Length: 145
Image 1: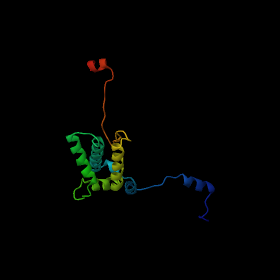
Image 2: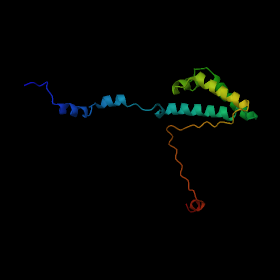
Image 3: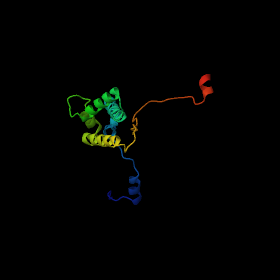
Image 4: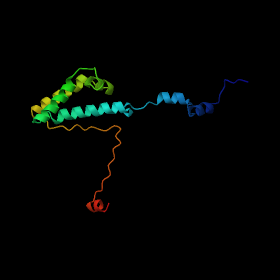
């Protein structure tokens, strides 16, 4: 008897059979998001704060505001890689191009100083934020609660 022969419907059935993989193979394919790691989330928060400070106080007069802007600007322009939360190291961890980010912020500031651009509030999006807020809309509901 020839065992190499198979009916056409057998070939069709094989197309729809599930692929079997072991648990080890499944774990290799499923990887956690990089933003699930706490240290990456902290680095993202540091970057958010630096860019927000840079933009918020770029053209804002006042001694305190200028000091905050200069601190953010010097951190962004620093090429030091000796400490984990330096601008260069955070860009590497977040897969940002440091020179591109610096150039974009500098171009934004030049437009801001020339008056061609309004204040831009950077729309940061919390990637894994677990913040929830429950508010009572009506005043009478707030008082009864």
